[in-house]
Amino acid sequence: MSREFIQLENVKKVYRTGEVELTALRDVSFSVARGEICVIVGESGAGKTTLLNILGGMDRLTEGRIFVDGGEVSAYDEKALMEYRRHDVGFVFQFYNLIPNLTAMENVELAARLGRDALPAREVLRQVGLAERTENFPSQLSGGEQQRVAIARALAKNPKLLLCDEPTGALDYETGKHILKLLQDSCREKGMTVLIITHNKALCAMADRVVRVKSGTIVSETRQSTVTPVEKLEW
Image 1 (cartoon, rainbow, N blue to C red):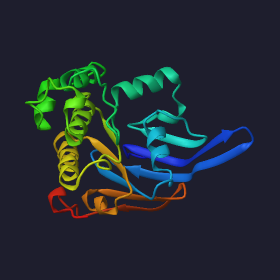
Image 2 (cartoon, helix red, strand yellow):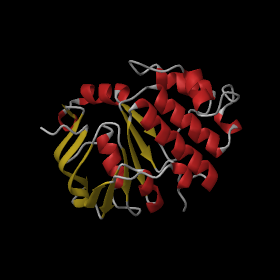
Image 3 (cartoon, rainbow, N blue to C red):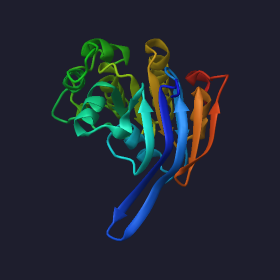
Image 4 (cartoon, rainbow, N blue to C red):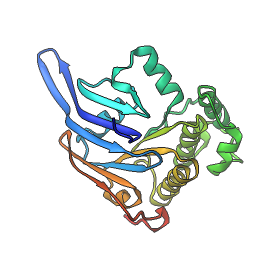
């Protein structure tokens, strides 16, 4: 078996509604090493989010196999999937998904309680630049601040794998670059494996590995020897 941290083998996903079938993914195979940043890039409707949901244990594949850290995620039962999502995976969603009646601190603390080796919520919020905003509710925070809470929430679990769905899609340029730097720094400092899905091709330069998706299949997989610091990215 591969020594890669993530391994997808001939993954297929078909959605069925009555007699209608929609193939969202087909013949998807690629790997990601431990501690890498992998950017999965493609246009809207290419299958990126479906891929992320299956990898994160939120959806099941139709055919194929997925391994993460030696475990065959695609063969897990519901209980094992729940444990996998709870302990091994952190999610950063495009539109934050914060709980509106909890403060920033409480949102992060709630996630931290799920992890085996969770990090202190206050410390993680400080690392993302929100030490002075811990008692604010999401409605009292800007979009960039809410996204930083979302990242803090994911990081507080201290997951092996961080999955990011268009993490800068709803942000302005400068705030988006700040968020990407947080992700890049977290990967380098904590040895975390980070997957980012995006339609923004400029983000490819910050990745160790780039996977290009089109019409539900992989068109290329590239391991990059030179990685650009986020500060130097332009789009």
